[in-house]
Length: 256
Ligand code: NAD
Picture 1 (cartoon, rainbow, N blue to C red):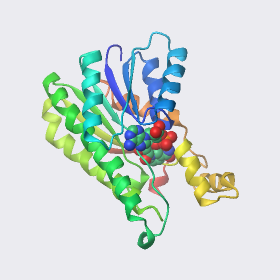
Picture 2 (cartoon, rainbow, N blue to C red):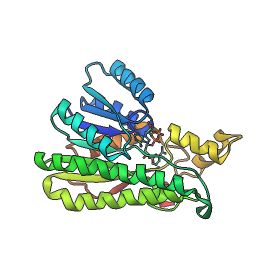
Picture 3 (cartoon, rainbow, N blue to C red):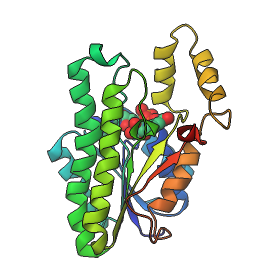
């Protein structure tokens, strides 16, 4: 992926950071975006240590703020001159609660980050990709974008929306050389999922983790690198004809 320019949102942790490492190993130029400045600085340091020579731009931005999204896109163009891939990965889970008790303010926050954040990214990147006649977009949905998940109404609603927007981007902009897909991770061990296990069983989060893993067809949770390898393919030129799909990376969980 030498000289390809890829933007990764939510790049300072979990799936975003793992994908940054995978793309750095393939010599891509990377814009890492996150609203957590401290974590972003630490990720920059770690990436530059592991991959000396990596061309890396970091931008602090909240993806739910339209102006800040426009800014990370503008900064990328100023620095690298083009955008080949957008990995729309930043997202939050919200709080777990039965549907009728769900906190509406939390619901709105989940929608702002998980839906509008993904939408704004595509809104500003697609016109650039159209001019180039080339682009690859990978949006992060979830198993919760394929089926329901008890106590996660807002998250499930937002991830179904990501699946829907992905289909629309694919059919509206395929003619411009832009292929858009979503991934639907199952339980991949990242800080977000560790927090979720703490919510399920505050006294023994490890027990919650083992219980969840035991229900997966593979009897295991996924690793961030499992997701990173799939994203690296979808966001590269190696993907020549896959578009509009939501690809589960879940050890088969969504087929149960
Ligand atoms: P994580 O919490 O480890 O990392 C998310 C990163 O996104 C953090 O660095 C955080 O600061 C950043 N972020 C959050 N909101 C942001 C915002 N508004 N603007 C900019 N940055 C923001 O989580 P993760 O597990 O790596 O999750 C990444 C994506 O994968 C999310 O969209 C999540 O819903 C999705 N996902 C994860 C799993 C899993 O099992 N880990 C499963 C399904 C889907």
